[in-house]
Image (cartoon, rainbow, N blue to C red):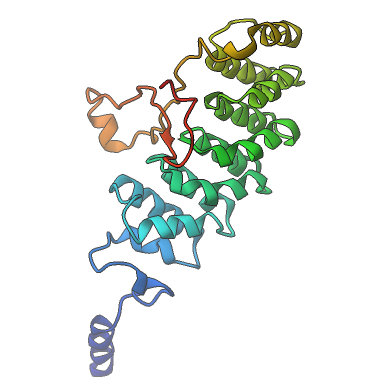
Length: 256
């Protein structure tokens, strides 16, 4: 009994299991308990729970959590990669663009789709070439449609050409997404006929974007939790928003 008591005292005085995790020293001393699981290399479920905690606590743009979320974009578990993308898109920042773009080629379809949704929330010209490649070549209609939606903020003639080509996509979902992006970029409603769009583009000349509409995206809203269900009168903000812009870009697509 005495031996067991001694062992119990030593265990209580020693470092916690979380503190023993590799990388735990990177977290501040006041880190929420669940947020400490970000560095747990053994359990993907705990890493996802940590990502949710960081998001709920408003720590996505607080270091070291932002850097850790960027690192989790390369996690071996696709559900963790996807959760990290959603966390970052909850507070969009152009600083994420360079770490998000590689996920457009992720082997898992839903990770690629999450990435297109995230890139729809930021305006950075360097994202345009990979997005156009996705529209033309990804095997998933959801991913192609997501890329077509994200391109609706870029007032570039060659982007319009790509979207006109996407009207011929075998998937109605992709064709419709391309059509809506063309409507945003040009202010015109010409349906899904590529020939009609091509004729209008040719006739418009230098006034291609003269009647462009303001591009907005639907903000990410996390699934309701228990407290949300207990307080249904508290509305969650679903107002469409304009993308966060890269100050180094020549912005021509956000409505002024």
